[in-house]
Amino acid sequence: MSSSSVSLIPLADTKECAERLLEAAETLGFVYITLEGSDIPPEKVERMFEISKNFFASPREEKAKCHISPDNRGWSSMHTEILDPEHQRRGDFKEAFNLGEFKDGRAQQPLPPALQDHESELNEFSDYCYNLCLKLLRLFGMALKIDEAEGGKEWFTSRHSRSEGPSGSILRLLFYPSLTAHPDFDPKLDTRAGAHSDYGSITLLFQRPSEPGLEILHPYLKTWHPVPVIPKAILVNIGDLLSHWTAGLLRSTVHRVVTPDPGTEGHKDRYSMAFFCHPAYPTLLTPVPSDIIRSRGERGANDAERTLTSLDHLKSRLSSAYGWKSEPV
Ligand SMILES: O=C(O)CCC(=O)C(=O)O
Ligand SMILES: [Fe+2]
Image 1 (spheres, rainbow, N blue to C red):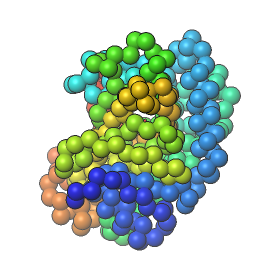
Image 2: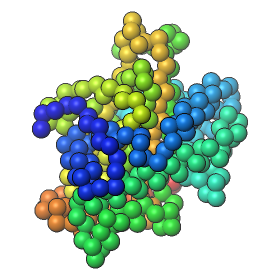
Image 3: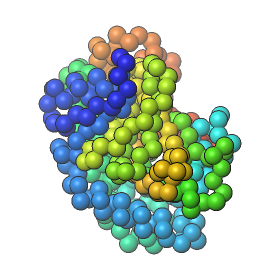
Image 4: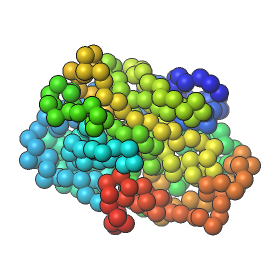
C-alpha cells in the first residue's frame, strides 16, 4: 500500500461497503464516508457549527465555569491539552468543549449559557453521531465475519449499547483560532493539535471547507500527508481501543492539526467537531470471535493475559494527555 489519499466511500448497508470500509481501516485507518446515507441531515451539521461558533465567542468567564474535569467533560482552554507530551513544550493552540453522554435528553455536566440554550439540539446531534457509529460498527462486524453464534454483525454494537452502562463517548467542539488574533503565537512552541491517535473505537470528524489543517502520518511511509476537506463527507478514523480489540488489524493512525502558514490560511479560524465513540465502560476487551482476527495471533486483545475493560483503556490514555493520574472517571 503506497497511496496516501483518504478514499471516499458511499455509505450503504451492503457487503461491498463493509468490505471497502474494512480495507480502508486496515490500510490508512482513515476513510471519508458520504454524509448521504449517514442519516445525519446536512442542515444539522451546519447548525452545530453555528452553535459551536457562538459558544467559543462567548465570555471567557462563562466558559471557565465549566472547565474540563477529570471525567473528560467541559471546556479545555488554550494550551490546556497536550496531545503529544513527548514533543510539545506548550499545550495545543486550540479550545475545545467536551460533551459527555446525555441522559433522558439532559447533559450530565454543567453547561455554559451559550450551550445550555441548545441542550436538546446538542443531544440530538450526539444521538445522530452515536447511531452512525453503530452503523459503522455493524459494517465492521459484517466484514470481519464475526461468528454468528457469538452475535455476528451485532457483536460490536451490542458492546456499545447504552443498555450496557455509561461510556466515555464524547461529542467535542473544537476551535483553532487564527494566528493573527493571537500575538502570543510562537511558531517554535505552538501547534494546533499535537501528533496523537484517538482513544476510543471510532471517531467521526466534521470539518468545514476552506478550513484545512489535518494531517496523517502515513503508517508505512512515516511521512505527514495533508487530508483535504471533502464537502458533504464525514471523516472516520479508528481509535486505539478498536485497534487493540482487533489485534491491530484495524489501524489507529497518528494525526495532527498543523498551524497554517501565516501568509496564507493563517488569518483563518478553524472549527471542527469530533465524536469519539467508546464501548460501555464495563465492556471486557476480549478477543473478537472472528477467524480473520484469530489469525492475527497473540497481539492486542488476543493476548488473553491483558484483558482490559473499556474504562481501564480510557483511563490510561486520559492521564497522559492532561497529566491526570488515575482519577476516577
Ligand atoms: O480538529 C481536527 O481536525 C482533529 C481533532 C482531533 O484529532 C482530536 O480532537 O482528536
Ligand atoms: Fe484526533
